[in-house]
Amino acid sequence: MKGTDGMKPAHEQPKGASVTRAFEQVPAEMPLAMPVQDFSAAPEGVPARPLNIDLWARRLLVVLLALLPASIAAHEMRISIGLDGISLWEGIYLALFIPLFAWIAFGFATSFIGFLLLTIGRGRGVQPRPLRPGDPLRGQTAILLPVCNEDFLGVLGRLSIMERSLTQVMGGERFEFFILSDSNPENGEIEREAYQAIRHSFSRAVHYRRRALNVGRKPGNIAEWVQRFGGGYDHMIVLDADSVMSGQTMARLAADMELHPHLGLIQTVPTVVGASTLFARWQQFASRLFGPISAAGMIWWAGSEGMFWGHNAILRVRAFAESCGLPELPGRAPFGGHIMSHDMIEAALLRRRGWDVHMVTADDSFEEFPPSLPDLATRDRRWCQGNIQHVPLIAKIKGLHPVSRFQLFVGASAYCTSPLWLALILVVLGGAASGLWPASAVLPSGSLLALTAVLLFGPKLLSMIWALADPARRIGFGGAARMGRGVLLDILLSILMAPVSMLTQTINLFGILMGRKSAWNGQTRDRDGMAIVSAIWLFKWHILLGVGLTLLAIRGNTPLGWMLPVVAGLILAPLLAAVTARKGLGRKADEHGLFQVPEPWWRTQSYRPLRYRLSVHGKTITPTWPANDG
Image (cartoon, rainbow, N blue to C red; front, side):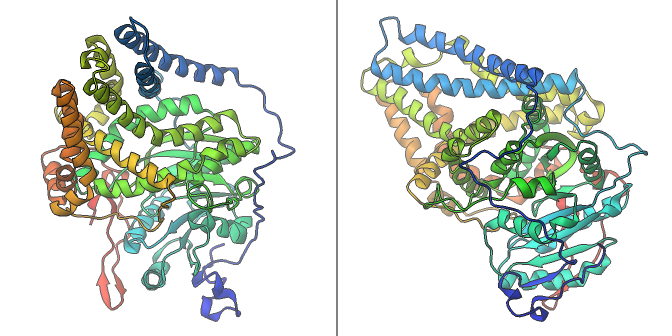
């Protein structure tokens, strides 16, 4: 398994080989069948599993915790507007308000349970078990890094960190890396030169393959690997080009897969690392501080019906091969063609075949975040199209677990809440402007406003309590004062960003439903600012909506204080995007301890990644490292 020269480069292969593979240095093929799944019929021979009463009781508890504040809010609004009966417009208002409030309450309930698990329960049941000296790894694990027109030197830098980390754990010799490229010929040539220059510097096998034809995007890329090499590996850890995972966590995941033969997938909950712009530093802070309690709550009620996010996860190769061969859907995009958000479907298909899908938290599983608001919107549009594509599949795929159907529904409905929020605002302002009701009749009362604030900002407060309770964690976030300043600024920026995301997702959703499909190319992972003129043009519809809502509020005598957060966020969207995309402000925030987060493991130990310089196209280049570790 150690040899990297088992197959020759494409130009030395038999005629026809270059049709699918432009260049590669890989081991001998070990084929594994991966049949395309039939969605119209449930798979046969799936063993029946006993009903887990405890797990269903957990889910019922979360639902009840969400319905309780939603019921209180519905009662308050019913008293406010329905004393003389409910008109058509008032019925529309309640039909929008109650589900949206329940959505917020569901998020709070999940975070509250996660807070209890991480504090009182000390994280039991949501973290992978620690390795013990008597737990030798027996299986072989492939680490897959799919890339498509990425900063390849950055990819090699992250791979070097993980490869060196594996040398420090027992059983690390049972892991091999595969770089699976779908890049274009120009970037592919850079990748080839860089790979050949560095591949002998690693202490284990690091293979590389570039396809000449990008068939099926990332799932097609991985499926091709499974069909060619899957027979030689027990597990595969799937990463993204911006992923980093410690060797300790990889070994723990592989040990868990060997200990529990019914497991098909374990998904870690990655946190953000490597932020340089102010926007990315803000999101990194929010991910590291607020993410753990929400993730712990979700893990608690999901149980063996967890989710897959397409990266930073380990999968049993045989289970994936027999369960996850994706068909091409009939018709045109957005509902036809290749399945874009394949990960959630693959998790559901694994569960359909009887394999357990679990999620765990991990302090050393990382990913990077888009550097600016426009880059986030670009990525979010692709996710929107992929999740909307799931809507007909919820009923079409036979044999899915009920929780899998619920997760697909939640993923799609997350993008439907934005137009519903916009519709709710227009109904309130439009009704007041047309004289259907006074604005005071439909605006939240003081008690309802307080309840809303608790549901929205309560998880942030709980996250602070969780972080402050542990001295090491508190120091990692810069102490109570710096953490508090970061949370206050996060709240302000979140308030400004919420209406921007609302309109952006609404535009994206309607564009997708009208047939304007998204491209799925390499992501923008580095940026330093953007021109204000370009930002104004990019967010022109946000500015116009902000002005329009202001005029509508004035016409209906709606107190402008209620509309200020929405209007300010829309009108200031270009400024918010341009300012937060600057690396200089990110550095200043770092210097002043703003949005400080705990250091990743490769900075807190004496550990250093492999250092080298590459000569690519006649230029000597030093690879970049996560978290600006240059």
